[in-house]
Image (cartoon, rainbow, N blue to C red):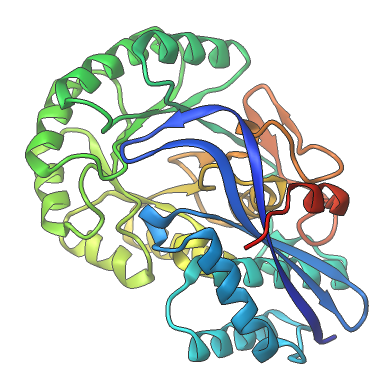
Length: 371
């Protein structure tokens, strides 16, 4: 089986409502999809959300990168995980960085190989360890009242894991909002965390963690800029709450550096940062070795394609004790034929070969935009 054609498709999908984060308010999803066809007629799909504050890649740049790589990769064999590694090695040789763009190709290759062999992607990544995972629900309405109302509603629906978006205001104001949300959710065995998305400096982040240290947070994610390793370490030393890295993790080496400097107790692993599903799986194995905690995440907001990819990773990695962030639930519509199985705040790993989904190509074309 060889790669016949790689097509990047830019899409824009409406969201149910905006999600407010430190540097932006996400109002719609601007994502790059990849449709990869083999000479056997098998089609695999991949996806990456545009996240320039995290990856440095825009929607236009991701589409351009895939278009640049496509003729260099077409014709290569794709019959095994080793073949996928060889394809991605060639991609790295011809184009530096651009991890999000490359991750779309790598995901599509795994989907195509799974469909060709009759295996789910999680089996290609080493085997299924779990069938179902609790979904980490993001809370970021922009107001304490809105956050509390949404958190209570989602808890009643069965959600047991929540992440409060902070870094959008004064640290003490965000701390007060966090405390109110945590107090509203306190009854029950829940995973509660907060994420500043690089919104503060070290002094501000320390003020925040000290103000919420008894609120019940399991971890506090990316308090300072991703490249401020010393700032992360300062916050970690001052905090009774465990610190997680996100925007600062773009490689296996980044994980090691955070561990060695005492800058993070765990990390949020995303295909768009690390370059694909296999790199994320490798990073999760390293976290297990180092005693670091793992959160698996889609970026805001991916369709059922990218979400299925995260679910297969969640099935295959040793541990996801910091939760699984899935974002297709924030979209008004999706591009897959049958919805993923979400119930009682949990998501089931799709069954069937490849990613286990069927893409509605008519919807893909409907939401496509020129780039």
